[in-house]
Amino acid sequence: MHKSLSTNLFEEQKLLINKLKQDNLLSKEDFLTLLQQPTEEISEYLFSLAREVRKKIYGNDVYIRGLIEFTNYCKNDCYYCGIRKSNTNAERYRLLEDEILSACEIGYELGFRTYVLQGGEDGYYKDDFICNLISKIKRDYPDCAITLSIGERSYDSYLSFYQAGADRYLLRHETASEEHYQKLHPSNLNLSNRKRCLWNLKSIGYQVGSGFMVGSPYQKPENLIEDLLFLHELQPHMIGIGPFIPHKDTPFANETAGTLELTLFLIGILRLMFPNALLPSTTALGTIHPLGREKGILAGANVVMPNLSPREVRSKYMLYDNKICTGDEAAECRYCMERRMNKIGYEIAVDRGDYKGGKCYV
Image 1: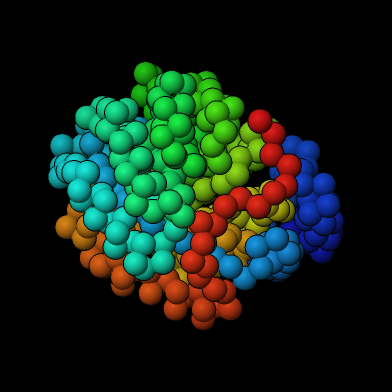
Image 2 (image 1 turned 135 degrees about the vertical axis):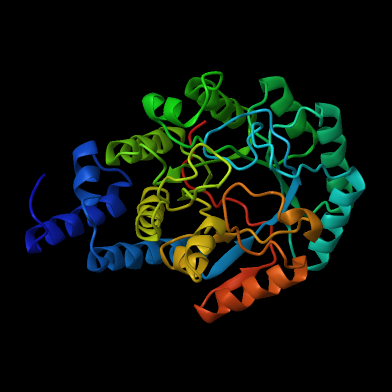
């Protein structure tokens, strides 16, 4: 385990990457060895296999999701999040139904066939509002998928959204370690409820997304391995990971951000673990490096999420500092993304971009 970086470690890590590609899983000990100071050389070997696996299932298609951040009110006080309820510097907003539907209309013209409705956990939007909104979007755009990302709700709420026409649900678990979870969240939030929500979503029939932060405060390599093993147990259809980026108005303002290198390495690992998964190359990656989203795609990701929110509210949905694209119009985001993807040999697909087959336990 504690060898110095050497040819021996490179060869051992290479064998483990081959094993992961074949079996889609490693032991805790093997994962620890793989995560032990990966070099640029071993990272590129991992990425080459990840691209090979991704291409076999999804070709060169990159799926675009139209992100509509419709509220930045949140009842929670997560220590890492810029829209936490205790942040009195946040300029709060809520979009009206007409504003959300207008964003969908603009998105449809731009070729989006999935809308991601994302917000803080805002009790203002009751289940009836969400259900009516979903029904109207489905009525107007029957060939589109709707993804919700609105946090922890009851089983009955999730069921009502699904019956109204929601297709997918994103709920990152953030960390699969109970001890680590408690260091990132106030005591009224708990990991067991988060996990219960994810299992409920799967049992209802959603395409389910989970994921975690990379490099969050107090995170150890063992925590990352717990994340990977929990995801293996859950078998989600979508997995979103991104580097932790501090926000100036949170308790973690002075903490160190997660790294591009480790985030990309984990994207590669996730592609080999979950060949069929929908893996976004996140805005957070683009925030910590000018080519972060391209690098995410080249590490094995196959989804990008340009912003469809009205321009006047974008800078207010600030989960972390220095978020990119807050001043762009939706069309700018869309065509900028297409140019970026074309430049590295990939194509934007005008498609719902559903999960493609593969074993997925419920």
